[in-house]
Image (cartoon, rainbow, N blue to C red; front, side, top):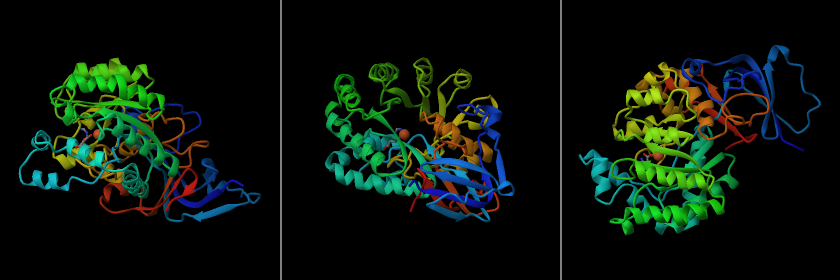
Length: 419
Ligand code: NIG
Ligand code: FE
């Protein structure tokens, strides 16, 4: 018998998507929308939302057996977050580099001295798949506790066939053993590994001829990513690698404009990338170019916070009619945090997004950025029962407002109460 859950007396059920609303993402002014029901009930059957409505129209579901009832008096029920950009599979941490930055070194200098991504790659190559899985599982549980229900996870700290496969197998195990909805991304082109230091093209050949075909054959990834950035992979490299991925059924979704404007966004648009991510620096022409295209801009404000680099011009983008998604970028170098409520606080405080915009960027637009728009990111009958029950809070806007505190009481993923 399928588990059934009834959440009743909900103070406010928020971010409801009407049956007639078939938008796959919200753009510009639409991002400020939020439909709610006060004094509501919501029913879960198996892993899906089975129904919801006002307590006033409540007729009861006495015929339901195997029913768990949750009284949410004073509490708000929301969709779980859709974090469309993370690197949670990594070995160890890099707090030493962070202290180096506090002492005046830059992220770039650290990377040029063999730190950064290469530091994480050397650590990861030493770790067994089981060790790596155990560390990643701890991080997965942590992000669940802060309300994340769908998560994209990248490889990119292996930088060899064997170690990239090891990372992707860990992602597969997380998919099988947690209630998170997970999408997997091949990011072999994250940095040039030490053994190819003077032969970047040789490494790109390895990616194109060996890594991509093997990953595709083993069905270990949904997306192909490249760190398109000065000192990493240039525009020609990026286009070649994305195209090779596409030939093997992987959709492009990639890092661009973190430190420099390269023209890579145009490549993303031309190649119909699902998302272009980072965009801490962004030219006005690029904002214009991103209007009315299928590629969505994914912004990562906790990376700006941690590296003290500019924040993406989200206000300008939304005011010009663009859809934007928000994600954490959880990784050991630029964002050692997977906390979506904190991302929303930064989005509001530093990028001047309104609370509804920050939620929609973390819900429907985050779902869009992982091809999950039909099943995740809002309250709708038939959508995945991925839900947050808050503590007693005055409003949902209180969550990004009262930053740094945990306002989540429980999280339901895949129709199951987590914890
Ligand atoms: O998204 N920018 C590239 N990759 C990661 C950081 C990698 C690292 O420092 O380990 C990012 O910020
Ligand atoms: Fe990233």
